[in-house]
Image 1 (cartoon, helix red, strand yellow):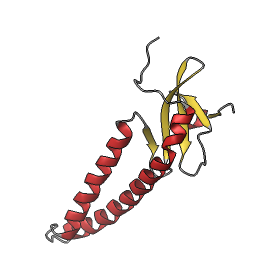
Image 2: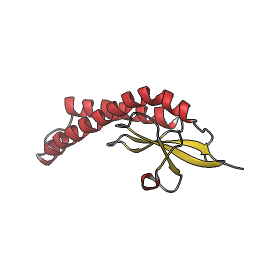
Image 3: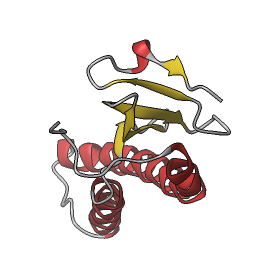
Length: 129
C-alpha cells in the first residue's frame, strides 16, 4: 500500500515532541504578532512617503527569517501547522492500516485525537486509550 507521507508518527513519538513543539509554536505566535506590528509601522512610513529603511525593516527581516527557520523545523519532520494562531498541528500516522493525521492543539495536554487526511479538524475523533 502506498502512502502520501514518508514519515508516520506513533502516538508516543508525537507526545515526545510536544515540549519542543510548544516552544516553537509560542515563538511562531510571538513572531507573527511582531510582524503585524512592524507591518503597521512600515505601512504608516510608506503612506507618509518616508524612507522605510532602518530599525523597523531590519527587525522585520529578522522576524521573517526566524519564522522561516521555525517553519522548516516542522516541515523537515513532516509535521503540519494547520493553524499557527491556535497552535493546531497534524502528524501523519497509520491507524488501522489507514494513513491519517494525529491532531493536536497547543492548549491540549496530550495527543488525544486523530482525523482522516481529508477530513480536517471537524472530523476529529478521540484516540482509543
